[in-house]
Image 1 (cartoon, rainbow over the protein chains, first blue to last red):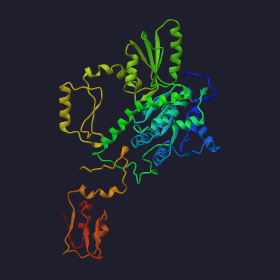
Image 2 (cartoon, each protein chain N blue to C red; image 1 turned 60 degrees about the vertical axis):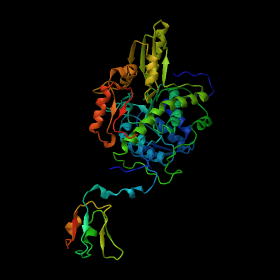
Image 3 (cartoon, rainbow over the protein chains, first blue to last red; image 1 turned 90 degrees about the vertical axis):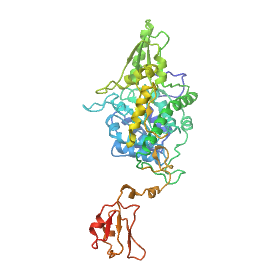
Image 4 (cartoon, each protein chain N blue to C red; image 1 turned 120 degrees about the vertical axis):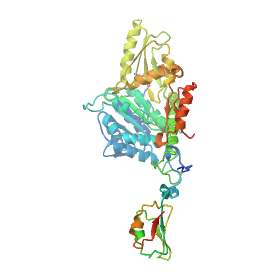
Length: 397
Length: 89
């Protein structure tokens, strides 16, 4: 459970799904396209009930599949309305093509995911294979341990997505059933506080807004595609700073603090640490607490902001800890688990320039790889020009 | 082929409507059709058969001219012309 800094009158018994719907009710997005899938369905059912009873004026659109959910959300966000929705597992997989479209078009859509295993075999229970499968498609990803975190992160996510230097969609993950269907006391803000915090929908490139005749989703040839993608890449990098600002701002309103990573019992003499995400972190923290009472020096690092990954913050937190375990809730067939891979990079970040392995990205959207680009690579690596940052070949800055 | 596109905003959003008119697809081919006006019998078969609709009838209703901005030299007009008045150059 996240810490409640003060006991408040506004504690409501909510499951994770209900907390998501409650935050959505207070945000009151203009358009919510929906399609059900276990275990996210209670989110959209509860929100649809709010809309049906007039508690929100949001337009709830029941579409024919999750691919259409994301297409409708893209249309709404591009037209000039806040768009939010929810999905899980195969639903998220079905809309995969449109995830890249939403991110590439720089639309600040917010989507809840109640994490559930991908098929086959069919399984409706908690697993991170759905969200990990799409972790690099351009959406920000936040992981919530509890209903309280789901509630607060939803409010933050709207501002994070619409931050002008970010302008990217955000996925808020909670464990299917373990968080989505289990009830806890959630401290809520008032409707006015939430409305004030999120403000009006802010997309300067709305189709129905001030600029005339905008075209979304046109063809872009190899001469400009690469630069457009790099701009998107920079947007994702800017999300680190935006997250710090917005979580700080919400802390001033709610008293609850949400740094990118949560440190539990991490100190100068910590000997062993478990790094994990979501509700598993809760179990880990409880065990660490009991072990610390017996004199052991163990702690937990919980990752909240997963994309963009907080390499610097994690690297700093674990730099003096000699024994690390990473707990992943998904398999990466043929490779190492996702969180583990990112933790390794964070762990060895300081050593990377000396490792003398330079990352380059080239050729996006058909941009040619010229012989002189390859010559440039050899020239750089043979003259010790190594950097932790990925470099780009034949990019017009 | 470099197309200057200063109006693309983030996400590749294009801010000036109708700018596809600036994209002359005739540039995609090195060859174009040319009508020999002396041989042309003004039957307008080339106009009907052109897949691009880029052979234009002039204001007198009779003469036809190929629009080089969009012609890609596909040779359909040259093949269809009953007077064999069209060459692909």
